[in-house]
Length: 335
Ligand code: SD4
Image 1 (cartoon, rainbow, N blue to C red):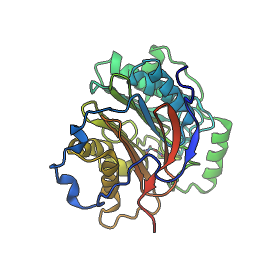
Image 2 (image 1 turned 180 degrees about the vertical axis):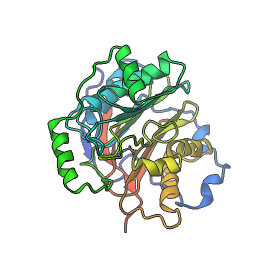
Image 3 (image 1 turned 135 degrees about the vertical axis):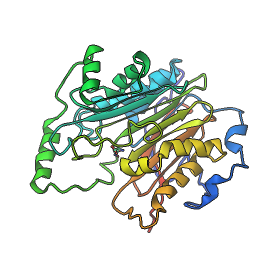
């Protein structure tokens, strides 16, 4: 293959490819719209490109292969996310995800294509590849969201198999948790968590996907940001896309991914937009952000990327120029 150095698995610390931004976090600078640098330049856009939350080498490699063969961004993000859903070691996505307080693994996922179409499933039990179910909701129904039993029923109708998503390891972890039953969000689960993925295909089309088992030991029925349009994911093919990981309640309160895309529309770089979006969370009066994490990734139409989190150790994988790298994100809380 032309890609002799295709998917070099390199771990890079520091800011790596991401431009350091001088954005002033938390002020109202995001309302200035005079600078259109995010929209004006159309020379040499970077494509194909994949960016995904956390250390997701294989998922990004899988998506990149779809794109390198001339496949579409929407196929790439679906195929990439399925890798994490099938990975039983990962305790925050798909099979093997940590359950809710009742011991049920419930999955959330959404997908968005370059035409602005969107599909999502929320609180689904017994079906592993919820990202593909979300795509079916988008393509085969007049709706955008299906929840719980209805989503499961729809999945089975579409040929998805029911299976037990609670692995022995996750069951053990839950049983241990029950001894104290203390609910505390976990800041970073072993550098591996909810996957949000954005891709640009060879035609320059942008799509995104996000899939998760949500917060470990959440209340039964709790839904986070990941399957919510504008929360865990947003794509506007004219501008770019963004995705989130971390404490979904905080992402939703600031409509984080939509905010980032709108900031890019106003001319912010992806990096500036991610930093401002984190600023919206941490600069709320009295907000105690010490015990929760939020991380964002973003890409614009040019293939410029950004990432930013509240705390250290958020990382993301990026595939571009025939290389797949894991990069440590810059972060806010350096105290
Ligand atoms: C949620 N945002 O359900 C997801 C969980 C997550 O890193 O991303 N954890 O709130």
